[in-house]
Amino acid sequence: MSLISVGTMAFDAIETPFGKTDRIIGGSATYVAYAASNFVKPILQVSIVGGDFPKEEMAELKRRGVQLEGVEVVKDKKSFFWSGKYHLDMNTRDTLQTDLNVLLDFNPVLPESYQGAEFLMLGNLDPVIQRKVIEQLKQRPKLIVMDTMNFWMEAAMPELEKTLKLVDVLMINDSEARQLSAQFSLVKAAKAILKMGPKYLIIKKGEHGALLFYGDQVFFAPALPLEEVFDPTGAGDTFAGGFVGHLARSGDISFDNMKRGIIVGSAMASYCVEKFGPERLKEITKEDIEIRIQQFVDLVNFDIELV
Amino acid sequence: MSLISVGTMAFDAIETPFGKTDRIIGGSATYVAYAASNFVKPILQVSIVGGDFPKEEMAELKRRGVQLEGVEVVKDKKSFFWSGKYHLDMNTRDTLQTDLNVLLDFNPVLPESYQGAEFLMLGNLDPVIQRKVIEQLKQRPKLIVMDTMNFWMEAAMPELEKTLKLVDVLMINDSEARQLSAQFSLVKAAKAILKMGPKYLIIKKGEHGALLFYGDQVFFAPALPLEEVFDPTGAGDTFAGGFVGHLARSGDISFDNMKRGIIVGSAMASYCVEKFGPERLKEITKEDIEIRIQQFVDLVNFDIELV
Image 1 (cartoon, helix red, strand yellow):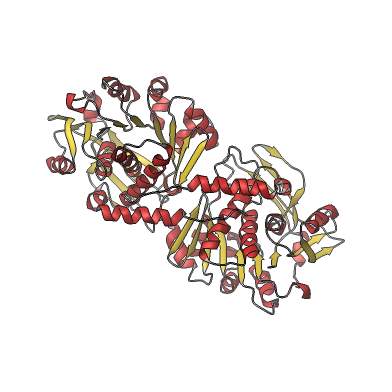
Image 2: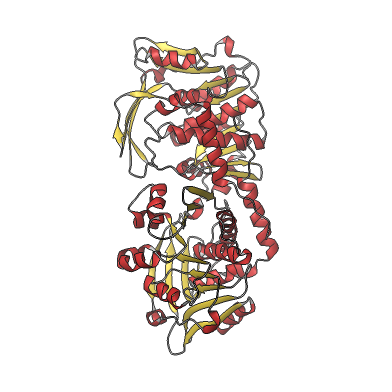
């Protein structure tokens, strides 16, 4: 099965209580690709970068089965840049700088070779752009997964609502779910959001795990309790990459398999936060992933006889 | 198996975003008794109340198998009173009033008939009082579970440290675990606290579930995602009552059975928050408890083949 992944490929500069980086590789589609490429090939990447984006990074992605035909390179411009600083709790951060650069011109044109892909991952972007990608597909994918953020709820709600009607799985964090639904209770928020289009809703709660809602069913997966969270940047996109990568590998989009996808995504995210940027994701092997998935099994596994 | 439960029996006045009560029944040992009495009899209660504590409440507890010989009644004084107001997120609250009243004179004397109990639940109290109860037991119980709070870490740390050395299971919330250990990471906090005496540590994270640490092992149970949390008062004590009640019923203090105890405690707590005070706990049946435990099984249950 093939997977189209649409999103940013960018530079980040990150400051956490544990350290500081200059410009390192970032971007939602970068993290999705590094996570998903452990499970599925090809990944059909759709993004835009400037002439400053390192050729070695492109080569490394290619080596992992990521096709770059849909990545526009604007030679005389700069890649998207974000810098931020995390607070001591690592759950909240301040944006220090956002330079959209090439992202201002992002108008993705799907290469003909991408047609027929069964899975589509729409990273957080302007909902108009997300919709344009869907509309270019001659055959609807088996599953469309979408990420978004509070910014679009404030700046482009009518457009966001249109795009939501076209997707199968929405993936947002808890505060975004509350904002989108105007409900404080996440159960009520989920009910409201599932009426807006998506059949499945994943609410990410960072260190507090993730919830999957489908009809009246709900599944919960914790985050792995870690000794250190070094840098949370990209954890959500890595989670998305592991989730959709697992689904695309198996071709099974049942609720039960989505549960497994959430565990796989959580395992990948737990590696992502161990080092700056996607560095740790580049190091890990299939065995590492298996070990961590087993830790999730042990973490929540119990056997109960009803009382 | 019998269970000694030591703690307050009191009045609370509660204000939440959803409603307000005048003086209603509260107190840690009250919640523990209502929860644990679904699983084990007798519960050997140790507490102190004033002449104002309702006889009907005493009768109701007795009917549920709670022995009250160890509950001192000071006729001409008032019961402990607490009032508080919850913020919109229901996770934080302000204390409006604390009248210690009879609690100032609390110096529990264990009735002879309580000797030989296999389980001891020490509700949040002055660690000196908690230790005095342990010291009165001629035979060490099979399991001693202890609750405490930040107040004692600030006001009586040396006494708290002494008591911690005598217990098997410590049960505190996440911010208390951080305070007690001076570690932000809960994994590091747990490692530090397990060196202070307890063999098992339960960290309660409210709506984000609970963690059980034992040696290098860790188990996580989520809280049930609820549409409404009406009043969180007593949820922690109800969790403790369900946990220790389950262990006392089975007599099994293995790590695996503690996992089950955490699920039972979480199920009981999920009922507690549905109404003011212990009201909902008085209504539920064994069938209700079974239904909710099954919901926990469904919530976290997944079946994964390693990738």
